[in-house]
Length: 324
Image (cartoon, rainbow, N blue to C red; front, top):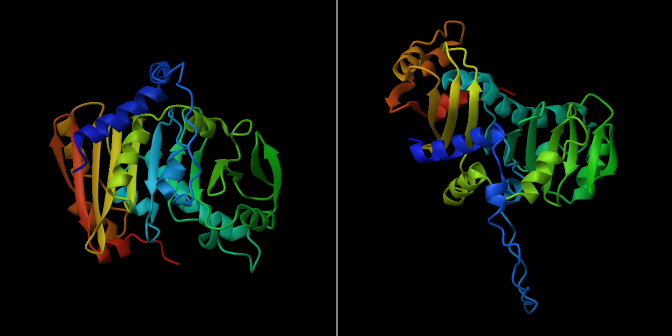
Protein backbone atom coordinates (compact mmCIF):
# COMPACT_ATOMS: atom_id res chain seq x y z
CA UNK A 1 0.00 0.00 0.00
CA UNK A 2 0.95 3.65 -0.16
CA UNK A 3 3.19 4.13 2.84
CA UNK A 4 1.88 6.23 5.70
CA UNK A 5 5.09 8.22 5.67
CA UNK A 6 4.80 9.04 1.97
CA UNK A 7 1.21 10.27 2.22
CA UNK A 8 1.80 12.24 5.41
CA UNK A 9 4.95 13.79 3.99
CA UNK A 10 3.42 14.81 0.66
CA UNK A 11 -0.10 15.72 1.69
CA UNK A 12 1.01 17.47 4.86
CA UNK A 13 3.59 19.45 2.93
CA UNK A 14 1.04 20.38 0.29
CA UNK A 15 -1.53 21.21 2.96
CA UNK A 16 0.87 23.41 4.92
CA UNK A 17 2.01 25.33 1.87
CA UNK A 18 -1.47 25.50 0.40
CA UNK A 19 -2.63 27.19 3.59
CA UNK A 20 0.10 29.81 3.35
CA UNK A 21 3.02 27.96 4.92
CA UNK A 22 6.20 29.94 5.42
CA UNK A 23 9.07 29.13 3.07
CA UNK A 24 11.63 31.21 4.91
CA UNK A 25 12.84 28.27 6.97
CA UNK A 26 13.74 26.31 3.84
CA UNK A 27 15.31 29.37 2.26
CA UNK A 28 17.40 29.96 5.38
CA UNK A 29 19.37 26.79 4.69
CA UNK A 30 21.06 28.48 1.73
CA UNK A 31 24.54 29.69 2.61
CA UNK A 32 24.65 33.49 2.51
CA UNK A 33 28.39 33.50 1.91
CA UNK A 34 29.15 30.65 -0.47
CA UNK A 35 32.72 29.60 -1.02
CA UNK A 36 34.41 30.89 -4.18
CA UNK A 37 33.57 28.81 -7.21
CA UNK A 38 36.18 26.33 -8.35
CA UNK A 39 36.77 26.56 -12.08
CA UNK A 40 36.81 23.04 -13.46
CA UNK A 41 38.57 21.94 -16.59
CA UNK A 42 36.19 21.73 -19.57
CA UNK A 43 34.78 18.23 -19.99
CA UNK A 44 35.05 16.46 -23.30
CA UNK A 45 32.15 14.12 -22.39
CA UNK A 46 28.73 15.32 -23.64
CA UNK A 47 26.16 15.79 -20.84
CA UNK A 48 23.69 12.96 -20.36
CA UNK A 49 20.14 13.68 -21.42
CA UNK A 50 18.04 14.44 -18.36
CA UNK A 51 14.94 12.41 -17.68
CA UNK A 52 11.46 13.78 -18.29
CA UNK A 53 10.80 13.61 -14.54
CA UNK A 54 13.87 15.71 -13.74
CA UNK A 55 12.97 18.24 -16.43
CA UNK A 56 9.35 18.62 -15.31
CA UNK A 57 9.79 18.51 -11.54
CA UNK A 58 12.25 21.41 -11.68
CA UNK A 59 9.18 23.65 -12.22
CA UNK A 60 6.94 22.24 -9.48
CA UNK A 61 5.52 25.09 -7.41
CA UNK A 62 6.25 24.56 -3.68
CA UNK A 63 2.84 26.16 -3.00
CA UNK A 64 0.94 23.57 -5.07
CA UNK A 65 -2.12 22.13 -3.33
CA UNK A 66 -2.51 19.13 -5.65
CA UNK A 67 0.00 17.38 -7.90
CA UNK A 68 -0.30 14.46 -10.33
CA UNK A 69 2.38 12.62 -12.27
CA UNK A 70 0.82 10.85 -15.27
CA UNK A 71 2.64 8.45 -17.58
CA UNK A 72 -0.07 6.09 -18.81
CA UNK A 73 0.49 3.89 -21.85
CA UNK A 74 -3.17 4.18 -22.83
CA UNK A 75 -5.59 7.02 -21.99
CA UNK A 76 -8.05 6.16 -19.25
CA UNK A 77 -11.67 7.23 -19.05
CA UNK A 78 -11.09 9.66 -16.19
CA UNK A 79 -14.73 9.72 -15.06
CA UNK A 80 -14.97 5.92 -14.87
CA UNK A 81 -11.55 5.52 -13.25
CA UNK A 82 -12.33 8.21 -10.66
CA UNK A 83 -15.66 6.57 -9.86
CA UNK A 84 -14.09 3.16 -9.31
CA UNK A 85 -11.39 4.49 -6.99
CA UNK A 86 -13.47 7.13 -5.18
CA UNK A 87 -11.27 10.02 -6.32
CA UNK A 88 -12.50 13.41 -5.02
CA UNK A 89 -13.70 15.62 -7.91
CA UNK A 90 -11.01 18.26 -7.40
CA UNK A 91 -8.26 15.64 -7.60
CA UNK A 92 -9.90 13.92 -10.56
CA UNK A 93 -9.96 17.27 -12.34
CA UNK A 94 -6.16 17.18 -12.64
CA UNK A 95 -6.32 13.85 -14.47
CA UNK A 96 -9.04 15.14 -16.78
CA UNK A 97 -7.07 18.26 -17.64
CA UNK A 98 -4.03 16.17 -18.57
CA UNK A 99 -6.17 14.04 -20.89
CA UNK A 100 -7.76 17.12 -22.45
CA UNK A 101 -4.51 18.65 -23.74
CA UNK A 102 -4.03 16.32 -26.72
CA UNK A 103 -7.74 16.30 -27.54
CA UNK A 104 -7.92 20.11 -27.56
CA UNK A 105 -4.84 20.40 -29.78
CA UNK A 106 -6.08 17.70 -32.15
CA UNK A 107 -9.32 19.60 -32.60
CA UNK A 108 -7.65 22.82 -33.80
CA UNK A 109 -4.49 21.69 -35.58
CA UNK A 110 -4.80 21.91 -39.37
CA UNK A 111 -5.13 18.72 -41.38
CA UNK A 112 -1.66 17.46 -42.14
CA UNK A 113 -0.04 19.18 -39.15
CA UNK A 114 1.99 16.94 -36.81
CA UNK A 115 -0.27 15.36 -34.20
CA UNK A 116 0.44 16.18 -30.53
CA UNK A 117 1.77 12.71 -29.71
CA UNK A 118 4.57 13.20 -32.26
CA UNK A 119 6.02 16.30 -30.57
CA UNK A 120 4.87 15.99 -26.94
CA UNK A 121 6.13 13.30 -24.59
CA UNK A 122 3.40 11.30 -22.88
CA UNK A 123 4.70 12.12 -19.37
CA UNK A 124 2.78 14.93 -17.68
CA UNK A 125 3.02 16.86 -14.44
CA UNK A 126 -0.31 18.44 -13.44
CA UNK A 127 -0.31 21.15 -10.79
CA UNK A 128 -3.13 22.91 -8.97
CA UNK A 129 -1.87 26.12 -7.37
CA UNK A 130 -3.12 27.88 -4.28
CA UNK A 131 -4.51 30.94 -6.06
CA UNK A 132 -4.83 29.62 -9.61
CA UNK A 133 -8.08 29.14 -11.50
CA UNK A 134 -7.14 25.95 -13.33
CA UNK A 135 -4.61 23.17 -13.79
CA UNK A 136 -1.09 23.76 -15.06
CA UNK A 137 0.11 20.86 -17.22
CA UNK A 138 3.80 20.38 -18.06
CA UNK A 139 4.95 18.05 -20.82
CA UNK A 140 8.34 17.12 -22.32
CA UNK A 141 9.07 18.39 -25.82
CA UNK A 142 10.23 15.78 -28.35
CA UNK A 143 11.12 18.11 -31.22
CA UNK A 144 13.12 21.36 -31.52
CA UNK A 145 11.28 24.23 -29.87
CA UNK A 146 10.89 26.19 -33.11
CA UNK A 147 9.22 23.22 -34.80
CA UNK A 148 6.61 23.08 -32.03
CA UNK A 149 6.09 26.85 -32.23
CA UNK A 150 5.55 26.63 -35.99
CA UNK A 151 2.99 23.85 -35.48
CA UNK A 152 1.07 25.80 -32.85
CA UNK A 153 1.01 29.08 -34.77
CA UNK A 154 -0.86 27.14 -37.42
CA UNK A 155 -3.56 26.51 -34.79
CA UNK A 156 -4.42 30.20 -34.34
CA UNK A 157 -1.86 30.96 -31.66
CA UNK A 158 0.28 34.11 -31.55
CA UNK A 159 3.86 34.00 -30.26
CA UNK A 160 5.29 36.68 -27.98
CA UNK A 161 8.07 37.06 -25.43
CA UNK A 162 6.89 37.19 -21.80
CA UNK A 163 9.40 37.51 -18.95
CA UNK A 164 12.08 35.93 -21.09
CA UNK A 165 9.93 32.98 -22.20
CA UNK A 166 8.35 32.33 -25.59
CA UNK A 167 4.60 32.18 -24.95
CA UNK A 168 1.87 31.38 -27.45
CA UNK A 169 -1.44 33.12 -26.84
CA UNK A 170 -4.68 31.55 -28.15
CA UNK A 171 -6.64 33.53 -30.73
CA UNK A 172 -9.13 30.73 -31.19
CA UNK A 173 -10.94 28.20 -28.97
CA UNK A 174 -7.94 26.72 -27.13
CA UNK A 175 -8.43 27.24 -23.36
CA UNK A 176 -4.74 27.56 -22.53
CA UNK A 177 -1.56 29.48 -23.25
CA UNK A 178 1.58 27.56 -24.17
CA UNK A 179 4.87 28.60 -22.55
CA UNK A 180 8.20 27.15 -23.65
CA UNK A 181 10.09 26.98 -20.35
CA UNK A 182 13.22 25.35 -21.78
CA UNK A 183 14.17 23.60 -24.99
CA UNK A 184 12.63 20.39 -23.63
CA UNK A 185 9.75 21.50 -21.37
CA UNK A 186 6.47 23.12 -22.40
CA UNK A 187 3.76 24.35 -20.03
CA UNK A 188 0.04 24.60 -20.73
CA UNK A 189 -1.31 27.45 -18.61
CA UNK A 190 -5.06 28.12 -18.21
CA UNK A 191 -5.94 31.11 -20.38
CA UNK A 192 -8.05 32.54 -17.54
CA UNK A 193 -5.04 33.01 -15.25
CA UNK A 194 -4.45 36.63 -14.28
CA UNK A 195 -1.32 38.13 -15.82
CA UNK A 196 1.15 35.87 -17.52
CA UNK A 197 0.42 32.92 -15.23
CA UNK A 198 4.15 32.18 -15.04
CA UNK A 199 4.50 32.96 -11.32
CA UNK A 200 3.96 29.42 -9.95
CA UNK A 201 6.39 27.99 -12.50
CA UNK A 202 9.17 30.46 -11.83
CA UNK A 203 8.60 29.87 -8.09
CA UNK A 204 9.18 26.18 -8.72
CA UNK A 205 12.38 27.01 -10.57
CA UNK A 206 13.73 29.54 -8.07
CA UNK A 207 12.62 28.31 -4.63
CA UNK A 208 13.94 25.29 -2.70
CA UNK A 209 12.00 22.08 -3.44
CA UNK A 210 9.06 21.32 -1.17
CA UNK A 211 8.15 17.99 0.41
CA UNK A 212 5.99 16.92 -2.53
CA UNK A 213 8.76 17.49 -5.05
CA UNK A 214 11.26 15.60 -2.90
CA UNK A 215 8.90 12.66 -2.51
CA UNK A 216 8.00 12.55 -6.20
CA UNK A 217 11.68 12.72 -7.09
CA UNK A 218 12.38 9.77 -4.81
CA UNK A 219 9.44 7.77 -6.19
CA UNK A 220 10.41 8.38 -9.82
CA UNK A 221 14.07 7.60 -9.20
CA UNK A 222 13.01 4.23 -7.80
CA UNK A 223 10.30 3.61 -10.44
CA UNK A 224 10.96 5.78 -13.52
CA UNK A 225 8.06 4.19 -15.41
CA UNK A 226 5.47 4.77 -12.66
CA UNK A 227 2.15 5.27 -14.51
CA UNK A 228 0.37 7.44 -11.96
CA UNK A 229 1.05 9.25 -8.69
CA UNK A 230 -1.37 11.81 -7.25
CA UNK A 231 -1.37 13.83 -4.03
CA UNK A 232 -3.95 16.39 -2.93
CA UNK A 233 -4.58 18.34 0.26
CA UNK A 234 -8.03 19.31 1.46
CA UNK A 235 -10.55 20.22 2.33
CA UNK A 236 -11.76 18.19 -0.66
CA UNK A 237 -15.45 17.65 -1.36
CA UNK A 238 -16.37 13.99 -1.78
CA UNK A 239 -19.76 13.03 -3.18
CA UNK A 240 -19.78 9.59 -1.51
CA UNK A 241 -19.16 10.94 1.98
CA UNK A 242 -20.98 13.38 4.22
CA UNK A 243 -17.70 15.06 5.11
CA UNK A 244 -14.65 16.53 3.44
CA UNK A 245 -11.38 14.75 2.75
CA UNK A 246 -8.30 16.25 4.40
CA UNK A 247 -5.68 14.30 2.45
CA UNK A 248 -5.84 12.07 -0.61
CA UNK A 249 -3.23 10.02 -2.45
CA UNK A 250 -3.45 7.59 -5.36
CA UNK A 251 -0.75 5.37 -6.79
CA UNK A 252 -0.86 3.07 -9.84
CA UNK A 253 1.86 0.65 -10.86
CA UNK A 254 2.19 -1.75 -13.80
CA UNK A 255 1.00 -5.24 -12.86
CA UNK A 256 0.79 -8.30 -15.15
CA UNK A 257 -0.33 -6.28 -18.14
CA UNK A 258 -2.73 -4.24 -16.03
CA UNK A 259 -2.49 -1.82 -13.12
CA UNK A 260 -2.18 -2.22 -9.36
CA UNK A 261 -4.04 0.81 -7.97
CA UNK A 262 -3.95 1.96 -4.34
CA UNK A 263 -5.72 4.89 -2.69
CA UNK A 264 -5.31 6.39 0.75
CA UNK A 265 -7.40 9.16 2.24
CA UNK A 266 -7.92 10.94 5.53
CA UNK A 267 -11.55 11.93 6.14
CA UNK A 268 -12.53 14.87 8.30
CA UNK A 269 -14.58 12.72 10.66
CA UNK A 270 -15.14 9.13 11.68
CA UNK A 271 -12.72 6.94 9.74
CA UNK A 272 -14.67 3.71 10.17
CA UNK A 273 -17.87 5.36 8.99
CA UNK A 274 -16.05 6.72 5.93
CA UNK A 275 -14.68 3.28 5.04
CA UNK A 276 -18.15 1.78 5.42
CA UNK A 277 -19.68 4.51 3.22
CA UNK A 278 -17.10 3.95 0.48
CA UNK A 279 -17.84 0.24 0.52
CA UNK A 280 -21.56 0.96 0.05
CA UNK A 281 -21.37 3.62 -2.67
CA UNK A 282 -24.40 4.03 -4.89
CA UNK A 283 -23.14 3.33 -8.41
CA UNK A 284 -26.48 2.21 -9.83
CA UNK A 285 -26.24 4.68 -12.74
CA UNK A 286 -22.84 3.40 -13.89
CA UNK A 287 -22.19 0.78 -16.54
CA UNK A 288 -22.11 -2.91 -15.63
CA UNK A 289 -18.32 -2.95 -15.96
CA UNK A 290 -17.83 0.06 -13.68
CA UNK A 291 -20.26 -1.30 -11.08
CA UNK A 292 -18.42 -4.62 -11.03
CA UNK A 293 -15.05 -2.90 -10.53
CA UNK A 294 -16.45 -0.67 -7.77
CA UNK A 295 -17.62 -3.77 -5.94
CA UNK A 296 -14.14 -5.28 -6.08
CA UNK A 297 -12.28 -2.35 -4.50
CA UNK A 298 -11.40 -3.35 -0.95
CA UNK A 299 -11.59 -0.45 1.53
CA UNK A 300 -10.11 -0.87 4.99
CA UNK A 301 -8.69 1.05 7.92
CA UNK A 302 -5.14 2.00 8.79
CA UNK A 303 -5.22 4.23 11.83
CA UNK A 304 -6.64 7.59 10.81
CA UNK A 305 -6.68 6.66 7.13
CA UNK A 306 -8.98 4.74 4.80
CA UNK A 307 -7.14 2.56 2.31
CA UNK A 308 -8.40 1.00 -0.89
CA UNK A 309 -6.77 -1.29 -3.43
CA UNK A 310 -7.65 -3.13 -6.62
CA UNK A 311 -5.43 -4.95 -9.09
CA UNK A 312 -6.82 -4.31 -12.55
CA UNK A 313 -6.25 -7.02 -15.14
CA UNK A 314 -5.57 -6.18 -18.77
CA UNK A 315 -9.29 -6.62 -19.49
CA UNK A 316 -10.22 -4.38 -16.55
CA UNK A 317 -7.96 -1.64 -17.88
CA UNK A 318 -9.52 -2.03 -21.31
CA UNK A 319 -12.94 -1.46 -19.72
CA UNK A 320 -11.65 1.83 -18.30
CA UNK A 321 -9.88 2.96 -21.47
CA UNK A 322 -11.12 5.78 -23.69
CA UNK A 323 -12.62 4.41 -26.87
CA UNK A 324 -11.33 5.96 -30.13
